[in-house]
Image (tube, rainbow, N blue to C red; front, side, top):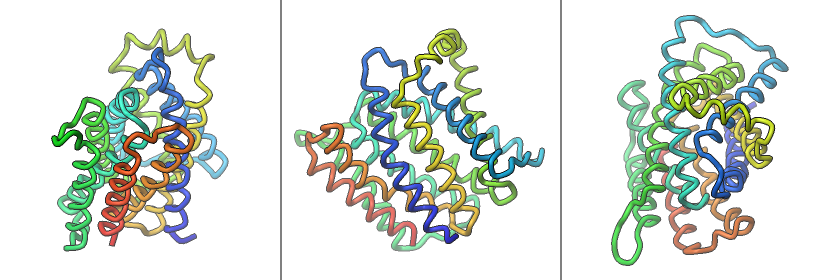
Length: 281
């Protein structure tokens, strides 16, 4: 199957999943750290289900350092995203996550020697413009805590994707998703070890929206890495996946009532989407 089809599946699943993440975290008593651990646990379960159905394969020992580096980056990024979504809207966070593409491109260019063209530079400028627009308010540019966490999470995820690209060159993509989901969860649990008792006792009360979010995110992740395994460059797959931004902004306006500054969000989403499409060329 052509890699562009897998990218399309990833876009749709990612867009819809973002709504359920916001729904899962909208209550004041929702704990972002516990939710992050539950999220990674659910990803691991869903990932292994898919892997065992298609034939799970153990990775070569030589890839272990790359799994650990990727897992640490995803752990920090996941914590940043769950803390961010408590503070800002799903549509706003989705636009800001487009900034992670810039780091994916830069790291891909430096370390794995992927191409960097004039059109990609224009695309990068459009993405930066969108970040400025979404954080521009009352004649000044200001990045609040939620926006800063979203950008940080995007940088960490964007860097991890480059490492993942190397891994899936030598390892089955679906099996990779299962293991790559477990490692960040382990890091988060060790990082916030005092949260483990609460994490365990609250398992039977896992939010249904978090469950749906995790399942859709698993679908998006598997489709994304299958795109990489079927010939997509990391800069292509990583940036095209951000085409979900416009769809997420529209869905959030209709289903989550995120209509404040909706036109500014739509313009920023369009700028980001055009930017990522140019970057993918």
